[in-house]
Length: 211
Image 1 (spheres, rainbow, N blue to C red):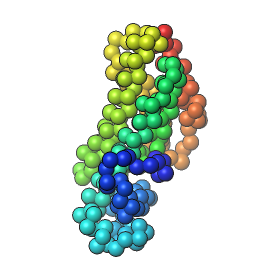
Image 2 (cartoon, rainbow, N blue to C red):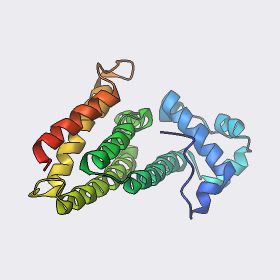
Image 3 (cartoon, rainbow, N blue to C red):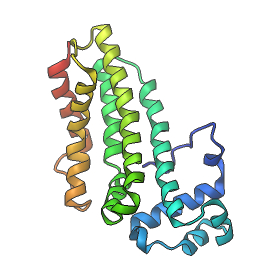
C-alpha cells in the first residue's frame, strides 16, 4: 500500500502523528517478523515515543495489530475516491477501476495479513476477514455503480445481474495478482506485469459485455 497516501479527512486519529508513526513501524514489524516475533518496545523506540505513550494509545499488541489492519482498510477506502472520480467511457472507467483493484490485491501488505491469519487463525481470523471484506466491498460497490451507469448510458450490454458481472471482473484480477502469489510466495514473480494483466482483463470483459 502506498505509505505516502494522504490520510482520510474528518477523522482526527489519522492526523495524530504519534499514532500514525506507531502504526507505520508496527506494520513493518508485523510484516517482517510476524505477530509472535513483534515486540512493543522496539516499535515505540523507532516511532520516537515512550512505551507508556504507546500503551496509552493501544492497550496491547493485539489492539495494535487490529489498528494496523483498520488503518490500512481506511486508506484503501480513501483510495477508492480517486476511482469514483474518474470519468470517461466504459473502457476508460473500467480500466481505472481494474488498475486500482490490481494495486489493492497485489499489495504485499494484503497478502501478509492473510499469511499472519494462517499462523494466528484462532485469534485474528475475524479481524483479517473484516479487512479483506471491507476492501472488497468498497471496490465491489464502486464497480457495480460503474457497470449500472454505463449500462444506462449504452456503453455496456444489458447485464442480468451487475453483482455477478462485478464478481467476474474482480475474480479475473484476484487470481493472478493475489491468490497465486499468496500460494507461491512473493519471491515468485508473475510472468505478466500488472499492466498486461489489466489489459487482458479489460479486453476479455469488454468482449463479453461491451455494447
